[in-house]
Length: 550
Image (tube, rainbow, N blue to C red):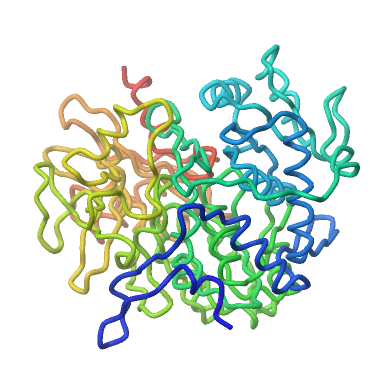
C-alpha cells in the first residue's frame, strides 16, 4: 500500500539522487480534512495523531478516529451556530487541542480559518473581524483573551464561542459539542477556494491578511519530509503558538501527510528544562524551534537529559547564531539545520536532511521554487553579492504554497509581484556551493557613510562573545553618516552593563569584521521588542530611536 502523500507528491531527481523538482497531482476538490485526515481515520483509525500535554502534566492522546469524530461534531456545531461555507472564523486558542479540531472542522465546512495570536490587542481583533467579515471567534478562557474578544466585537453580529471555563453568558464550546451529533456529510469545496487568512506580524506598516487556498497543505509535504525529516510513526514537536503560520508548517499539514504524530506542549511560561524533559519522556523524534529556544537550551546541562530518540533538529524564524548552533551540536551530536520562508509562502530555502549545513547559512533553494537574488534593477547578482530573494515562477501561475492575495488589497499584491517575480523584501547572498546567507530585511539593511551593512552578520559576531545572550543590530539616525550601527544587547548571567564592556564588545566586532561594521552605539537592555510571532522587531527599535533623535 502506498503512503497517502505519494498520491499527491512525486520527487524528480537527477542521476546523483538530488531532488531537482516536485510534481503535484490533486483533484479540483482536494480538501486536506477529508482526503488526508478522514482517510487516515478510515485506514488507520487507532494510530495516534496528536499528543497534547499541559505544563501540569495532563496528557491526552488523540487517534485519527478521534480527530475525525471530533472535527465532524465541531463542523456540525459551527454550522448550527450559523457558520457557512466561505465565511471566516477567528481562532484564538493558544496551544489548546481544540485548535486542531476546529481548523479541520472549518476546512470541512469550506469556511475560512483565521488563526490569531493571543497576544494581539482588542483593536487588532476588531480589525481582523472587520476585514475578514468573521462570523465567529473561537477563543480560550485564559489570560484576558475573552475580555479582549468581547470588547472587540461589541455589538457586531459575531458569535463568541468559548473553550475551557465558562465566560459570562457566551456559548461554551464543550457544552455545545457534547450534545452535537457526529454525522457530517462532505461539503464540496474547490482547491482554489480561500482556506486560511494569516495576518502577518506587521513589522512594517499595518498587518496584512495573507490568503491561502486549499492547495496550500500540499506544499508542506516537502517541509515535513525533507526538512524536518519526520518518519511514519514518529512524534514531531514544533515550538509555535497556534496563531503563527509556523504552526501550519510544523504542527499540522505536512506531518499528518507523512503519518507522523504531532506533539503539542501547552505551557504558559517557557522553561528550557521542562521542554528538554518533555523531549526525553515523550521520545520526540524530530524537533523544530526558533533560535531563542536553542539559546536557552545550551545554557542547560544537556547531559542530564536522554535525547537519544531525537533524530533531527531544525530552526527558522530569524538567523541562528553560529555560536549557539555549534554549542548545541557539541552537546548533543545533532546538527541544527536552518530554513527560511514567509507567511505568504511555504519553505523557500533550507538545509534538507540530505544536505550539509554550511556554517551560518540558511540552506539551499527548495525544489518547490526557483529562487534568485536580484539587484534594484531586477538583474541577478553575482556569487557573494547581496541581492533580494525572489521567487521566479516556472509557469505563468504562482507556484504551489505561494499565497493567492492580500485580503482587500489588490494593489499591494500586484506590487509584491512587480516584474513578474515574487519579492520577499529580504536580502541574502549566495555562496560557492549554492547555499544562501541571510542578510536582513530590505529596510533592516544599514546604510552608513556609503556602506551597506547587514545586521545579521554583526549580530552573529556579537553572539560569540560570552557576555551576549541576545542582541539586535539596527540603524540609528545620524546627520553626518546617514545612520550609525547600533547594538541593543541583553547580557548573559554574571555580566554587568558598563562602558568598559561596551568598548570590549566594539573591539570584539572590529577584530572580526570590516571596521565600518562595528556598533558605534552599544545599549544594554533587559528585553527586546518582538512581533506577535516572537521575532525580534528591529523596526520598533528604529522607530523609538528615530523619535529619540528627532
